[in-house]
Image 1 (tube, one colour):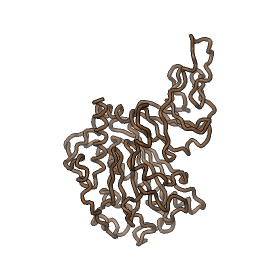
Image 2 (image 1 turned 90 degrees about the vertical axis):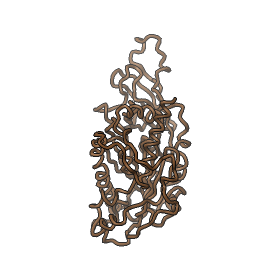
Image 3 (image 1 turned 45 degrees about the vertical axis):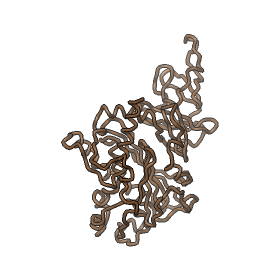
Image 4 (image 1 turned 180 degrees about the vertical axis):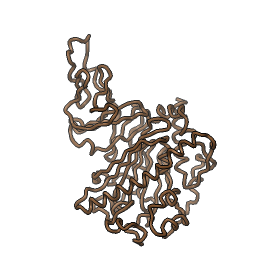
Length: 419
């Protein structure tokens, strides 16, 4: 296996002196009091991705999103003029959750001409206006124009729907910054074949982002995924990513490994050889616009062995663009200081043949196995961090984005406390 050295820039971390190079504390991941500050400082004040426009394809299409860290539930809906709107999911009469099915804590989706409260039958249009009050004459000086659904800021970037509970926040595209602009033009909208995974994880939300913020762990944690002598070779070489970049609270890393098919087919499993697919996705790139040439922000090092770019859009949204022509997203939704909901979603160009479908299925189940390995250590990590037997931990140069994530979160809390 070829080993590609670190680019000539030298130490990545030392390019960002504000991050430091000393041991770090993870107290921010084990303190209930700090988590409560993060809820208010981060999740009630930053842009949060809640889905894609394909989830609301036509007038009246809608879905709900539970944002536990902000103590709210939202309705995302396609309006009469094609606009995407967001509202707090609460009836203005007695505060009942407005849109839900059998279990009020579960997210739901559907299509409706209007929203009707299950409790007393108040109705709301797709624009949030109150359109009907049961026995309206029984109320005292009720002006229904003052009792529409409470709107939430909602903007769309490259088909991704974002919300922000802070009415004074900077516009979305400005917030996402340079890294997002470098992705613009990637054919996200062509990749509508979707596979979803969702799980409750017993760790702080930042610790799972940490797990995907470095590939230093890959030769060790994922050793059993390789066949023959591949695991031993990886252990001997170690792993270093090709490129790192930081823009405000956002970051990215670019990694190698994108040869598809691999030069030596003996390093992959027989089913991967037969289907021409695996963890990097189907080997045969789809023939769609937007992949050749790629947008300028993709594979910024221009490395011939480029395999993927992983972007973290603070606080809890990741996009991973893969060289063979597909992408996935990760979301980390906190539910407590030591628990969160992890969502992993894979996006492919719709298959044209049964073989295409099988290749995508293989990539999806392989991703699940890798994802399970990545989260398998987290609950043990959370437990031992909470013991406080050790309070400071060394990070290497490849773990620069871990330093950056925790500093970004801490800076957001500090700004909130100073406000």
